[in-house]
Length: 140
Image (tube, rainbow, N blue to C red; front, side, top):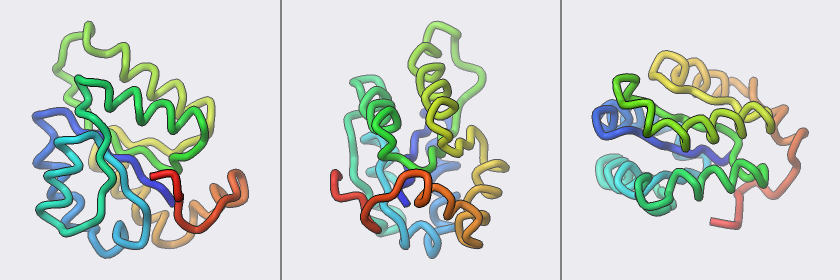
């Protein structure tokens, strides 16, 4: 499965800690992320993370386009809910695309843990039936 990682600045350390805790599960999957989040996760955990541009430079839109083409199976998006509404247009697009394409989405660590544990149990195998492709997404 392909898992996308996005974290606002105040949530990046939480994303890194999450990836450390679930490194064993995440290592079995293809990971992609916005630039800074991907670098922090890769440097700290040793996981292979394909990095798009930073969120502010278009990385969120790059991930959104992958979702639109059904190339992402799970989105872990640790959001800072205290940010201004002005900055939320890209976020709303991501959330809408996940809804449209039945992409499991976590916007906080509690839901992310539920999704990762479900992934490890095989509860999300329906994604491979819904969107069949090679074991590893070769587009990254």
